[in-house]
Every structure is written in C-alpha cells, then in structure tokens.
Image (cartoon, rainbow, N blue to C red; front, side, top):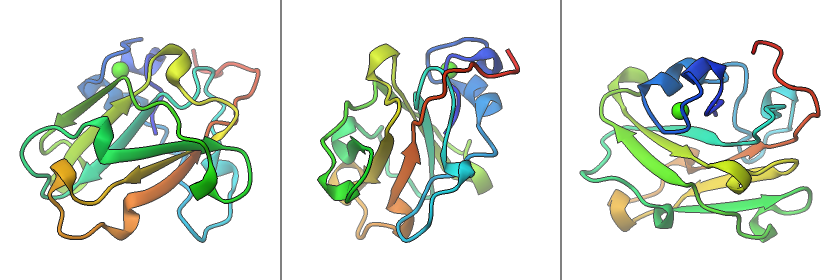
Length: 154
Ligand SMILES: [Ca+2]
C-alpha cells in the first residue's frame, strides 16, 4: 500500500510515478493463513487509499474494477464481508514494478477509502487479465485501522 495524496507524492491524488515515493515500505498485506501484526495496520489519516500490485506479464490494456473484488470488514470470515467501494481509478505503468514487472496502481478518493476496517483485495482470474490460472498471491488483506493521530512526517 502507499499513502496517496500525501506529503510523499506531492499531495497528488492521481496515480503517477510519484506514488513510488509514498510506498509504505514497513507495511505488508496480510496473506491467507498469516497472523496479523503491526505491519498489517496503517494509521494513515486518509485510510487505505492507494494499493499497488506488481504483475508479471500483464496482458495488454488496463484492468478495471471488475477484475477485482473488494470487501471490507472487521472480524469473521473475510469472504463474508460486505462488498466495498471499488477504486476511483486504476492505472498501469509498464515495467515500473519490482523486477521489471508491470505496476498496477489503485487509488480511492475521499470517502471511498476504507477506514477502521480491513480491506480485502482479490484479483479475479480471467477477465481482462487473461490469466490461465490465479496466482497464489492474488488474495491479500490490508487493514485500514485508522488512528486519530496524523502521520508524523508531514
Ligand atoms: Ca498520487
């Protein structure tokens, strides 16, 4: 995840290369079977408003919200959480991801961003991705436990 529209990306609400400087390198998605730790929680005042997914061999075109499933909840089985708002925009930067992969950036604006809950992002197989099979890393959860304090480096 990254802190979209923050000091680190020049307060730019759009998805751009500036977002790479706003990556929360100390935060990690909680994968199925893992136990949540501090690394899975963000205290960003704007909630979970930016997620990057690096994809190898991304097919031509830009994924849409229909290529993902977004659910938000607090406890219980993530698969039963209510559907959450999709991202405001999705952008692709070819070759900008780790190891030369393609970087897919999802941003949520304003109230669309999940706060005080977990956000589960699932990459759906097929569709625009044209994947023959889903990758093991396709399902991840991030928390939007929102603290009342603002980021200290502002
Ligand atoms: Ca941005």
